[in-house]
Amino acid sequence: MGIVERRERLRIQVRSDIVKTAKEIAREDGWTAVSIRKIAEVIEYSPPILYEYFESKDKLLEAIRMEGFDILQAEFLKIKTHFSNPQKQLAEVAQRIWVFAIENPEVFQVMFNLEGAYCDSKNVYGKAMSIKGNPVWEMIASLRPRSGEMVTKTYYEWWCLTYGFISITMTTQPRYAFPQAEPVYMEGVRRFIRSIM
Image 1 (tube, one colour):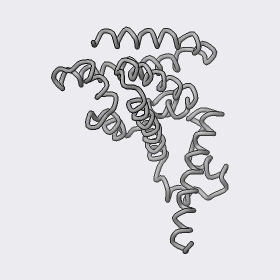
Image 2 (tube, rainbow, N blue to C red):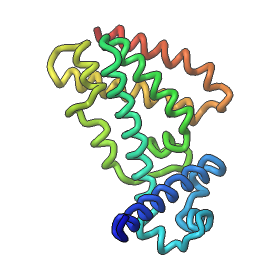
Image 3 (tube, rainbow, N blue to C red):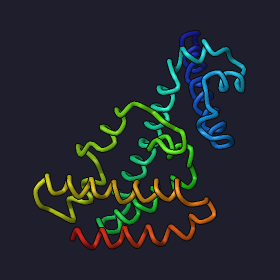
Image 4 (cartoon, rainbow, N blue to C red):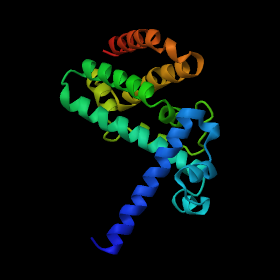
């Protein structure tokens, strides 16, 4: 392996360590405890080195937000391939969003500016909500084969129902109450799916 490849591998590793450490600090102490200086202290790098990777905490949070939506998008594509029934697909998508939020609360917080994880950038939302090649939009379109405008409106309502329900649950309920909230969430999802057929 040449010097260039080794440097690139090191660069990828350091970037990954920064993101991982930020999430670990947030999981332990909340997002307000996360700073470039704190991350540098934990991974034993100087803050200026971290600024070479992320020029600000906002840029770091934007990268984590993108990572969260990318992970979910990959899951949605798998679901679309695995199940042929669009009703089942949407129910599985909703379930996957719930599981992701419960297993990765610190990432979900960044995705939706919850619990002190405020990220000013809105760029990722545009990409995540884009209808072009979007598997969830396509699932809804197969249930509601009307004009694209109606499908897009229903897709927006889907976002509000799924991500909104989970965001409200995460910010208003203690963690031990989440198992009781999940059946309420899934029943709302099933009603929504029935309503668009």
